[in-house]
Each structure stands twice: as C-alpha cells, then as structure tokens.
Image (cartoon, rainbow, N blue to C red; front, side):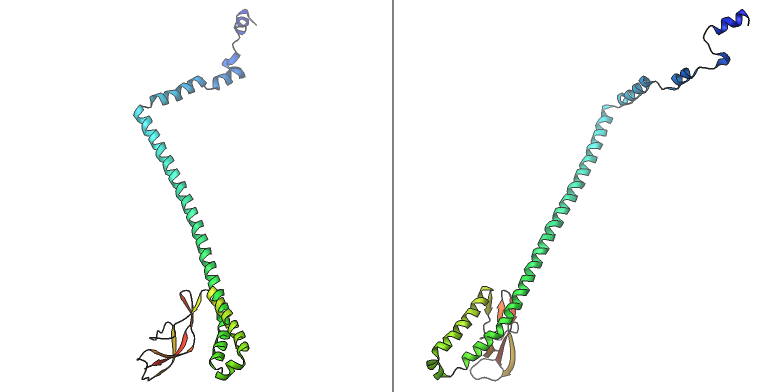
Length: 205
C-alpha cells in the first residue's frame, strides 16, 4: 500500500463512500425540535377570530351532546313513571273486578232474605219475633258489608231508567204515570260509578 493510500484511510472516512450504521440511523431520525416548532407555528398561525370560531364550534357540539343526554334521561324517567301509572291502574281495575265478583255472590242471599221478609205472615211476627230479628241482623250485616265496599241499592221508584232498571213488563196503570215504575221486583245495586246489577221492575205504559 502506498503512503498516499495510507493517509486516506487514516482520515476516518469510510471506503467506497458508505456511512457506518450509526450514522445512517442518526440521519434517518427526524429533528424533534423542528417538528415541535412546526406544530407551534401552526397554532401561532391561528388568528383570534379563528380561535373564537373554533371554541364556539366546540361549545355548540358540547351543548348538543348535553341536550341529547338530557332528552334521553327525561324520556327514560317518563317511561318509568308511565309504567308505574299503568301498573297502578291495572291493580285498581283488578281490585274492582274482584270486589264486584264477591259482591255479586252476596246479592242472591240478600234477595232470599228480602223475599222471605215480604212473605212473613202478619201473625208470625208476634209469635216468632226473636227468630225474625236474628234474620234481620244477618240481613243488616250483609248490607253493612256492601256499604263498606261502596255498594248501594238503586232507586226503584220514579221514572224508568234503562241504565239502571230492567223492565219485565209494561202494563197500564191508573195510579202511575206512563214510563214510571209500578213495582220493583228485585233490588238493583251499583258499586261506585258502575251498575253491579239492574233492578227488575214493572213499568206503566
């Protein structure tokens, strides 16, 4: 090897113009300061008007999201309340139906007692007064049960009302005006605003 070639090798430069691996990696890494400076430059390039517009847009988006969440929450609460009200109405209707059915089962007993008292001979009241009073007490207890359930008898006199009365006959009458009730053959009852059973009546023509 000549002295000139030896001097070229002692300079530390690679042969054939190739860089060592470390040098290649350093050359490939980006300049972090340059990137940072570029991002800051973009923010610094934003004008005050643009900043205000951007913030207003972000605020509008946040308000819309909040309104959407509030609407969903209100809908959920309303659905829950409506479901509770439906259950309450259903329970009330169920209790009404059960009460009506139970009261209807008592009405034939009252009918029998009422019919029996109508047909008691006049002389029997003196002889069997204690016996009759016992049945009268039973009748009163049944009426008290009906009253506690808000069941009350219908008016069996006056003008015929198809909503409350059921006519089993229409007949002429000299004493009762036409369309009015001559006689009630079976007492009718209502429970609150419902007709539990219409009254059976005779109606004047």
